[in-house]
Image (cartoon, rainbow, N blue to C red; front, side, top):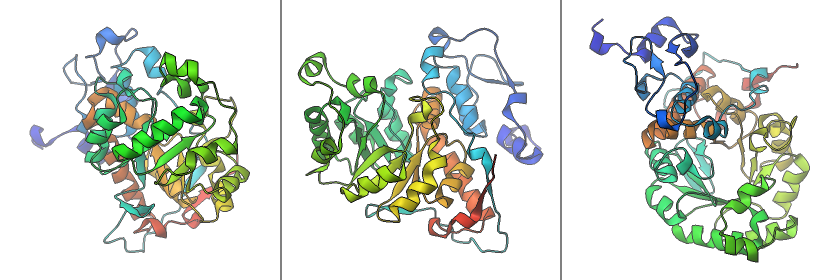
Length: 373
C-alpha cells in the first residue's frame, strides 16, 4: 500500500473495530495548561507539537482526548466524563435479512424535516473552549446539517449566532433567572430566527443567572419556580416550546397537559445530585407517560452512534449532544464540531443497517435488550 493512501482510519478498519486509541497515543508527561495549547495528542510516528489530523480520529472519545490538550484542567473538567453505566446494559439485536437500501435517517420535528435525529445541545459560554465559541459551533453544526440549541448564557449575542446557524437554531432559557429577563431573551431569540425554545428547569442556579448583568441581577430576584412561571414564559411565544430537565413520568405528563409541545429528558450530566438516575434510564417511563402526544428528546452521556440508536429504540424522537461537540470545538473549531456530528451520523447509520432499520420509524423497542445488573 502506498504511504499516501494509508491513514489511521483505514488501519483501524483493517485491524478491526476493537482497536483502541489508548494503545496508539503517546501521552505527554506533566500537566497541560493554557500556555501549551498547541500540544495535541501525538500518534506514534507523528511529529511532536501538533494535533492529530481530525480525519484520523476514530471516535468521539478521541476528540475528548484532543480537547484535553487544548484546555486548562479546570476548563476541561466542565466538559469531561459523563455517566455511561446504563448504556452498557443495553445491547442491540441485529437483523441481517432486511433490506436497508435507500436508508433515511431524517426525522420530523415540529413540522420540519431534519437530516438526522441528532441535535447539538445547549452549552453555556463556549468562548472558554474556543475563541469563536458559539459562532464556530453554529457553523460546524450547520455544515453537518444539524440544528443547534443556543444557551441564554452564551458568549455571543443571539443575533450573531443566528447569522452563522444556516441549518437551524433553537434557544434555551432558564426561568430561575426571573420571568422578565427570560421572557425578554425568548422574544429576542425568536426575532433573531430561533425556531423553538427550551425552557430549562432544575439547572444549576448560577448558570441561570450568569447571563444577567449586575444591574439586571439587582432588579431581578430569583424566582420560586412553579408551573405558573412556566405558563407565563410559554404563552405567546409563537414557536414550539419544550420543557428541558424532565426526569419523571409525572412531570412529563403534567408538562404536556399544560401545553408544552416537547419534552427533553435531562439530568444535566448528573452534576446536580450524586446518585441521580441517568436520562437514558428513565427515558422509557417518560415515553410511556407522554404516549406520543409530543416529541420526547433526551441528552446525557451520548458518545457513539449505538447510544443514539438505543435512545431511538426506547422511544426518543431525537438526541441532544452536549459534551462531544465541545470536544470538537476546543480541538478543531467549527471543523471539529462538524466532524463529531458527522461521525455520529455515520455510526448511527451503520447501526441502522446492522439492525435492519431503514428509517427512524422502523426502530422499535424490539431492536434492543436491557440487561439486569
